[in-house]
Length: 406
Ligand SMILES: [Zn+2]
Image (cartoon, rainbow, N blue to C red; front, top):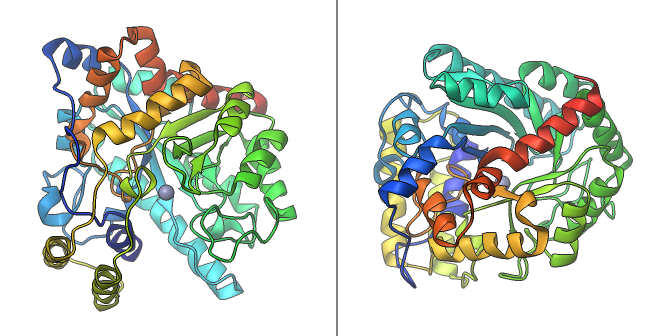
């Protein structure tokens, strides 16, 4: 629970104050098209909620009460076929004890994803290959690919990558908010430590290629992305990222790198997290209040009632110290720029729901049809919209499978 809470308090921390027209209407035609397409989001942080006692993926939840954005009823309402469900591990101490704790937490999180699928066999199915996605959607189930966000749990023992592959992982990012033994982060206040990948990080890349796991460059530094593109034998994915030309943030990618990513066959999946989309002014009182809330909530396990109380407290902080919050159109501007620079074959969706994502007019999984509606309004063809929703990412997954000989 702690990682989910941490993300919630530090990353999804803006008040509902729209700056411009929030989001597009969804016509019947757009909704019908949306339902026909295979739709995948490459960064669902929802597994972080699996450890809340009393929270279940098959139940209806209210974002305003428990903070969650994805569950089965909302996936159905939002016409999302599924995507990549993250095994997220917050970066902790880079010590033998820290490494072991991270390893165990990540294995447990992977098992919790499998457990959620096993408990709902008519609603969810694990996807282990690119071709599984369409087959699972045709059976009217939600597609569950597994991904790793932060390679920290593997930094002491890279052989675990094959363990995670066997558990179902098909996409893996090396690093998160701060540097680790594998790679430099885009957001470590101390700056780069390895000038990109460490030796161990390079071995991670080779092993991921050998197994058929796609490499994820989101959260990694620009140098790491350059090295991933150069070293990886298969195209790189940015599972949830934005573009620097629209908002200059270390988590976003500049145009030269967008072109290099596209030239190597890679794909950027556009994220819907306000902090990376528009400038957010610092507010020290708000920061202190959130930090105090976070401290008060430090404990290993949460019940749903405790989670709801926490969210209510957070809403008070939002009302007292509101900050500007990005809109759907702000996020869409990142998407359109990425399409203009990288091309329609190299852009997709990774909204970061349950990990800090969600903007005004695009708040939870029920809002996915707005993306289809907005792409239609922009004049994109059905074929192009299908590429954005899954064609591009599945091409990258297939390339990784082909290299590994699957
Ligand atoms: Zn992330």
